Image (cartoon, rainbow over all chains, first blue to last red):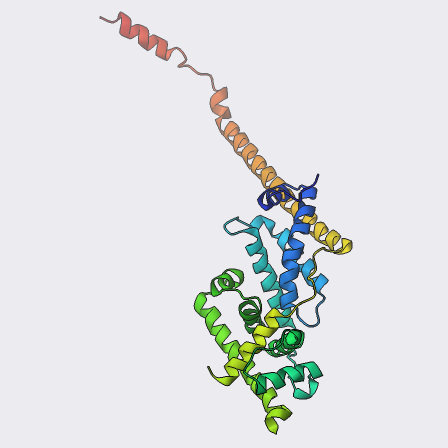
Amino acid sequence: MDDSGTPVTELVARTRMGDEAAARALVARLTPVVGRIVRAHLPRRTSEEDLVQMVLTKVFTRLDQFRGLVPLEHWVARITVNTCRHELAREKHRPELRHADLSEEQTAVLDHLAAEESELAPQQGIAARELADQLLAGLNPEDRVVVTLLHLEGRSVEEIKQITGWSGPLVKVRAFRARQKMKKHLAILLKEHPHEAA
Amino acid sequence: MKPLDDQLDRLLRAAAQAPREAALSELPFTAQARVMGAWRSSHSDSVSWLANWLRAGLAAAALVAALAWGLSWPTLRAPNGDEYAVANAALYVAIAP
């Protein structure tokens, strides 16, 4: 039976009754949702596939706890973000970012930020992403999650509240503190940068 | 806006717009099998929990029934001398002047 068009609520109900085909269809339906979030919050030493599997296992073993008060995707997103956060917390070592470790492209991004007031060119996007990821790696898991959701995924505070389960003020405070830390690291990089030193 | 705020914002905006490799859209067979295995075992756990709960309920109900029957046994076995009492009383009321 092809379940590609079946509403997700029906798949959940059938999965709860023990319908294996529905469970398989639900895995297929949720994998891209989980995959996208995991990609955005992936800890450095964890395999994307392993983390997706870990999240889906949690989702399926806790399916009886889903009350249907929010859409299933929101409930799954919350489990995914929390799992990523726990995995990030297990990475005790937070690498210190040094100017000498930056690639040529990342140095060019710093050059642009220091010398120009314009936006970065689209072709600098990947280097900017790598540099942002390195700045994020220096943050604690909660700060990292909030910056990723707010600035890289463009989510609203309301959405972040739903995904993380944190209050609005807590989201704002964490975002503010995370920005302060990122600014501090960026300032160190810019200070070490030859363009600024000259 | 302070320069550092502006620099960080420009960096984050460029990072947000950067193309990324496509995220995992399909779980490999082995990973899917592990998820299904975990689901099956948790599902059978919950089913067996329900069965155990029903079994315990049934046993408790049977025990209560047996106790009630046991306690009422002497009353049921005792010869009842008053079995015509109601009929007698009715006759007496009807006949009495």
